[in-house]
Image 1 (tube, rainbow, N blue to C red):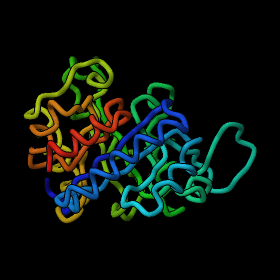
Image 2 (image 1 turned 120 degrees about the horizontal axis):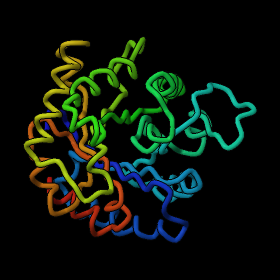
Image 3 (image 1 turned 135 degrees about the horizontal axis):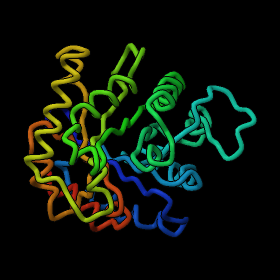
Image 4 (image 1 turned 120 degrees about the vertical axis):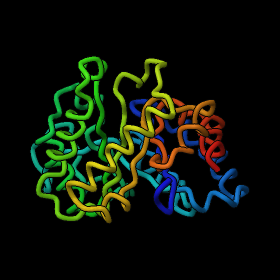
Length: 253
């Protein structure tokens, strides 16, 4: 952990309904009871349909709400099925995930991701910027080259990095049951921080939170989050069950 806060970000993907919001009660109870969590930031990123009701439910809580993606347009227009950052902000979102591997898989490239990041920052959202290598890229031993390119192109012409969180998600470890070892996670996070330092300066590198996003669960959370350059996690399936998500948070604290 290199920053003041550890981030625990719940990515619900295309899962959950209004009844799923009831699970938030158990997480809120835990946060009130567990005093050490003042150094933790808890953020839920549900499907678009749940952002408003979740924001209203959590308005007196220290849990914050984000979105899973956005359109790059600054103003509303003829983009069927799309939602832009200003719309997300209007319904209570404070963060947005951009560049997730599942969206990269479906065609998002670094140029589009860069435009989305710029618009989101301009509209006042904080960005959770995802990077990571596929199994094929890992086997070809080009992971560092891929990460360098994703960071460089994704953050091109963005002057301030203050409201950007980086989530390293080894694509080969998402939803596969495979997980990077704690030492592997630390090595990659240290490499990412080193590249940011080289490219943008030591202060920015030290201020940037770098999260791990590869199949984290209560059983491996303590070891992964105990590493020096790991500043929290982007949690997928485990975040839908309150007891598992609380277990991950507790493992660090």
